[in-house]
Length: 304
Image (cartoon, rainbow, N blue to C red; front, top):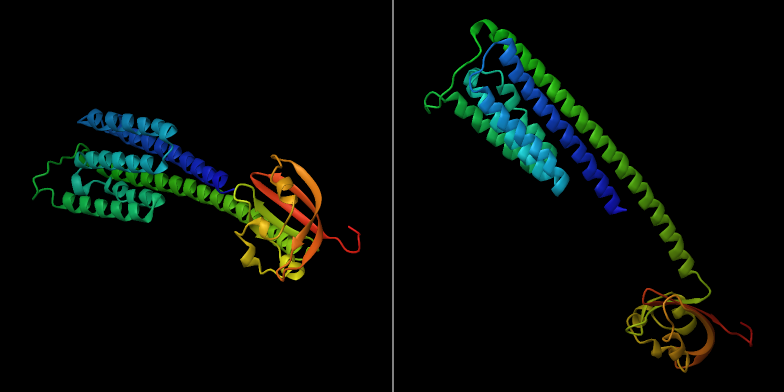
């Protein structure tokens, strides 16, 4: 059950990654489109946008090959970081409204892990500080958006940031909800299996037959039920790992260890008690997966 559940969770995460990647590409393309057609600017935009879009699309295509969501997330965040910083540098530096997009990157990283979220929080925070001191650090910045359109540009970026974050949170919520449902279903199945196992244990422990599992290769007891103590006097721990010949004698040993896979056998034999005495038992044996599943009923007064 663990493997199917894990696979389902990975598939859900991959679906979110694909959706987020397409949204990010569409978002940046929309910004560039607004700058081109809305504000009639073209400074450096092809050099900033084309490598980013190509990298994002290649990243999401390679996800289908390596199927490692962590790698895809890191590359997605890294490319987004480089793209946003590039756009910030040509839209006013620290005054650019695209700073709002930059500070959302840690949220994407936190979806991968807390560690990655903290790392990208530190990176984003350090980047904002560097942009703030860009003049002192002689980092070239300019603003390709004229003052006449600055308010409109800021409004559009805020709107874009709101839509991007809302869409991302909605996708994550859906992903978490699906994961929760999958986990709940797996937990219910596990509880059901636990109840069934408990019933089987009670059935074995309260059986009126000797029950044991014997390893064919080592010819030793793997498991024995409590009736070995009640009828024969053996402590369960002193039989586990011990040779079967300690208890079952005679030609019966040759019979049971000659069984082939899926073979079945019924026979009678003497069994040695812990006190040295002997009792007669009627046995039923089945060979499965290198083990002998053996059941014995005591023969009393010639009746089986």
